[in-house]
Amino acid sequence: MKLTLPPLSLYIHIPWCVQKCPYCDFNSHAQKGDIPEADYITHLLADLDQDLRFYRTAIADRPIHSIFIGGGTPSLFSADGIHRLLTAIRQRIAFADQIEITLEANPGTAEAERFIGYAQAGINRISMGIQSFEPEKLLKLGRIHDRNEAIQAVGFAQNAAKFGLKSFNLDLMHGLPNQSVAQALADLEQAIALQPPHLSWYQLTIEPNTMFYYRQPTLPDDDALWDIFEQGHQRLIQAGYQQYETSAYAKAGYQCRHNLNYWRFGDYLAIGCGAHGKISYPTGEIYRFSKTKHPKGYMRGEYRYQQHEITLADRPFEFFMNRFRLLEATPKAEFEAYTGLNDNIVRPTIDWALTQNYLTETADHWQITQHGKLFLNELLQGFLVEE
Image 1 (tube, rainbow, N blue to C red):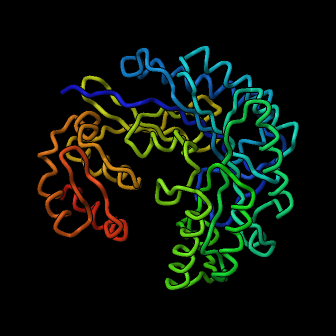
Image 2 (cartoon, one colour; image 1 turned 90 degrees about the vertical axis):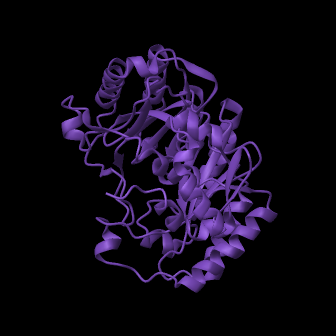
């Protein structure tokens, strides 16, 4: 079996944050004393070196099309540290022309000089976790910034455009504890007024092993959640944003290329505590892998945690689980190229989905319908292999 190799990205995880938010299930650790920035960067590069050796026949001469530095709170790291990291990565693997390099930032750690320094270091996109502009909601969510700091951070990002920053994203939540429809829409209006090129607007969900899971807050009911989404979606469209993924809206040309690569079943290397990656070989194998979660183990040089092969039987579900998050049509040619499977293997499920009005089909594409979006879990279950 031969695979056409998809674009290759790189995810970098920086695990530290000022304090753990009660809704957060990411691999993050509250800062205790000074962060070992220099040592951690040394380990990130050693981790990358190990992967470049381990996956050398899969990577070969493939350039990186995007880098995403997530956390935790990567903006706790200095601009000099980020410059050292990116410079060393470029020495190890080629960067594609017009590479997108995103850094996540907390408005509570934002400084004008720091944002300029990030841009000068090579960061050309910043993603800021705003979540809300309302003081009571920010306090409930455990955020360390206030409304004014959030607005100020956006100003820093806009100013950094003169130094190479090309785009910025705002993360905004809705469906917050005791949030009314009017409050959720007011948050959204404030975000729109700041004119971000990209807006991630998503509903708060209660995840296991979080503080909210053990002490669950009162959330809006389903009717209120639907009203928030329906009215907010229309407002975003009116403001010139295009929805291109379940929770992602962007002005034309400002979609997050890194996340698009995830959702299009692309490949991505991953370094740092708890980072997850995916890599395809031209000979047909596809693997997912993860790294050691806790900083103590990771910084002993114990980088690799586990790896498993995506079997032929699992590939349809894995492919469509990602692809159907997008509103764009799914090319049949990409299913065959990136999974190594003929689309005849999913024909019975596709035919069933067509009868349910979950999908439409042309000679070249499958397109999820609005009805299909409402029943996405049921649609995806059709691609699961029974044990």
